[in-house]
Structure formats: C-alpha cells, structure tokens
Image (spheres, helix red, strand yellow):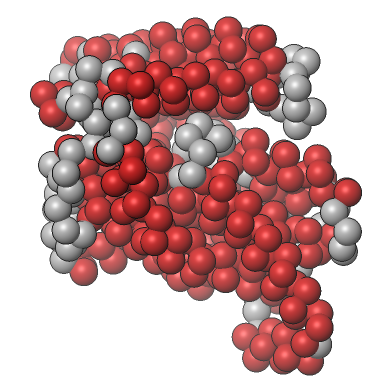
Length: 424
C-alpha cells in the first residue's frame, strides 16, 4: 500500500520546477497538448464519433508523428479529455423530438424542448470541469482502495455487473417499462455477443464495432424519433436554475461514479449516473442527470489513467492507445496535460455550445436528422465496412425498443454488459 501511494503521489512543487527548468521542452509539450485539444474539439463535435475510435485512429497515426512518445501520449490524452467535454454539445442539439414526446425524451433534450438548452450546456461544462478538479485529489485514495478490492471484484465481475443490471431494471416505474428494459438489454447483449469480436475489412485500419453499435443503439433511434419534431426551439438565457450546492453534489456523485467506470469494464457514464443519482438526496431531475453524466464521462478519463498506472489495466480506448504507442505513464506530465485540456474543454463548451444550438435550430429538422443518420451510416462504413452498415441498421431497430415501453435507454448498454456477464 505504501509503495503504491509513493508511486501515485504527486508533488506540485516539483512539477512546477520541472516545467520552468526547461522552457523549450515545456513549449514543445504545450504544442503537443494544444494539438490534442484541437483534435478533441473536432472529434467531440462530430455526432456519433466514439472517443474509443478517436483513440484508435490516433494510435494508428502516432508512429508517424515526429516527437517523443511521452508527448504523443500527452496529446492523445488531451484529445480524449476535450472530446469528453464537447461530445455533450451535439448530444443536446441533435435529435430533439417533438414537444409532445418530452416525457420519453433524453434528459438533456427535455431541457432543450423547455428552452433551457443554454443552461444545459453550462451544466454539462460545470459537470465535466468539476469532475477534473475533484477527480485528481480523489484519484490516489480511490486507486489505493480499488487496488485492494480489485482482485475480489474481478473474481466476481459477473455478479457485480448483474447486480447493476438488476438495479437499473428494478428502478423502472412500471412492469411494462421493466419488460421493455429487459428486452432492450437482451437484444443489445445478443448484438454485442455476436459482433464485438468481429474484425471486418474497412477503409480505416483503426476500425472497430463500437461505432456502428453505439451509433445504431443510441444515435439512430433518437434521430428517427426526431424526424417529426420541429428541432431546437428558441432558447432562453443560460442562467442556471439549480443551487450551487446541487451542482456541487451531483458533480461529486459524477466524479465518484467516474471511478467505477474507470475501473469496471462495461459500465457506461449513463449507467453510473443512474446509479449515482439514486444515492443523491432529493430530486435533481434532468439537470442533475446532465451534470452527473458529464462528470462521469470526464472523471472516467482521470481515473482510467490512474488505473493504468496502478494496475496496468487500460479501461478506455485512450488508455489502450497509450499502451499501443508505448507512451510512458508519466503521471505529472499526463495530469498536467489533462488539467490544461480540462480548462480548454470548459471554455470551448461555453464558447461553442450556444452557437451549435443556434445553428442547428436554424436548419430544417427533418433534413438535418436524415443527414446525421447518413453520417452515422458513413462512419459505420469507415470503421467497419459493409458489415458495420448492416450492424448499424440492426442496432437501430433494437435501440427503438426501450422507449416504446417507456423504459430508459440505458438498458441498451447490455451491448457491453451482456457479454461481460457471460464471460465472453
């Protein structure tokens, strides 16, 4: 335990001294990190581009990038952090359904329908920004605890994940919703079991099945439901309508839940957010979900970095890419990169989020939805070829199931949880 603590301990004074001792090296490192920020900005604003596919793309081109592997790794981490901030923006702006469907819409979309999209953008930025600030001091004690518990958790992983699935189903409001959630879980789980290990020929060497699966399960159904909607309505001001305490508590819940996502395979930000909010006193509604989900998504990157350093276990695509590029796990450098990327991501969300909503709101909603569906199909082809397009179509049909029964879409994470529970 003491050895682990020493390995993970960080001395801010020594970090600062190292940065000032070599101005040229610091400038070079900063250039790499800013390059990663730029890549993460572009990828985060592209609907349906999963951060894991971004990471694999970066890993495939990393050997051709001139520069030491440690700086290439820092750029990749920065790209992943910024992506985790900005991917909330297209999720809020695209696929907004008709107001009559608000009850079954995603929490963020409910805010947009109510004219509170600008507030949702700020809540997302706060959730991610606070997650970075909270995850760093929490990472060392949480990592030490998880290092002790991990062998037991790993030995009983199917039981742990099965309990999470049971909790999600039992917290649905009606028996009909439970049945719909179970159908969505089984259907997506069967898809994952049948396809995750496939390696079809595709235009991009750094392909994978995550893009067609996630685009079909989570992206396409939302866009199909939005075809008859009127798109993004006129938005009110961006004032946050919940207390600072609520934002802080839900962000903390997201950070702690991000630790779970960082150490347990198959658990997504949405799964962790639903579980975490169940333990938050009082009802936080859609606003709390936006803060918590954004917090989980970003904190996951920090905790996954510490999991890689302590356990040698890459839990995200970015961490896998770091290993594949043989970038050393230099915690001071990587955390400094993540911190800088976090600041950049926060500023970028605030600067681009309102504009994104305004631009999307000015476009024809039906044409936009069809266009984004075509983009998702195109991404599926790029990453997984013709097989990917077929799987995208099948996944889209499965993704329509839960909402038809009034169930949450989170049950579709069975695409990862199902195979893990079965030991595949």
